[in-house]
Length: 134
Image (cartoon, rainbow, N blue to C red; front, top):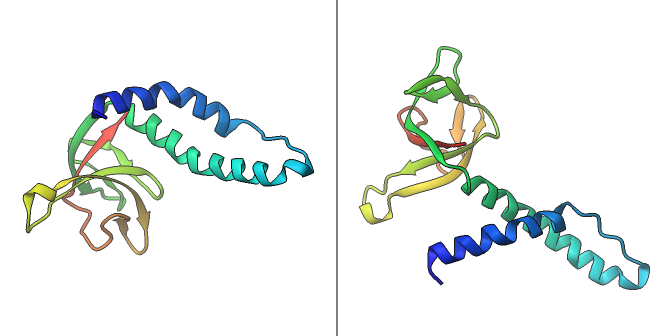
């Protein structure tokens, strides 16, 4: 299946997935097994719904992270927007050995003595190329 076709099908399906994920399952004791299985699917599909919603947003800004005076990291192009714990971030990771594998990675910011990117915790945050979707 071509990427564009797959994306179209997923975005068309997303409203139905949302209704399923957000709905409360009611079942009797004789349907307990099926009910538990469907609840398990709700948990798994919740992430899919979030990711489809996220990827549906447009990339609105791209730049490099700099450390602000308050210790938070912001885009070099806009010091007003900054990242704190739990915030989603897209980072461009460069593969030093093979440029073919350099690519954007979806991750999040966390803090432990300083901020770090979960997908690349040992990489210095300052200077990382990132982009923002809105």
